[in-house]
Amino acid sequence: MTIKQLSVFLENKTGRINDVTRILGKHGINMHAFSMAETPDFGILRLIVSEVDRAVEVLRAENFAVMLTDVVCIKCSNSAGALSTILEKLSEREIFIEYMYAFAEGEMANVVIRPNNIDSCVATLQACGCDVKSCF
Image (tube, rainbow, N blue to C red; front, side, top):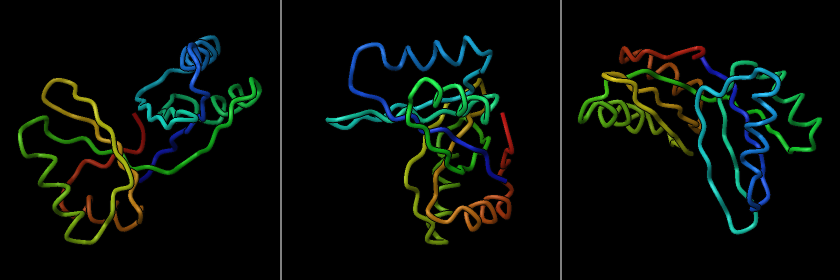
């Protein structure tokens, strides 16, 4: 199971992140998770949203460069060592993680993973009993 992630390329300019959040909010699109990465020339805002196709449409209409990527989302215990155990299983199968981000909700954490081999990652996670999510 995979979910679609939006990657929005932003100029390194004050207010650009707010422009994205304002546009999504105006169209009733909820952001479930996000991560921001930067380079000297631009930023990449990675988003998991409630309405993927609509988000792409409205952001592109406002001249944002948007790319879709398949990612894996798991729910795991928000306890010391829980993520390490899961990552060890992926490492044993030589699954490289390009990037990941996470957020905790009480006793549970949601982790978004972009692996080099998405099918092998999902199969490995399911085999070790991880709660692989299809959506938020």
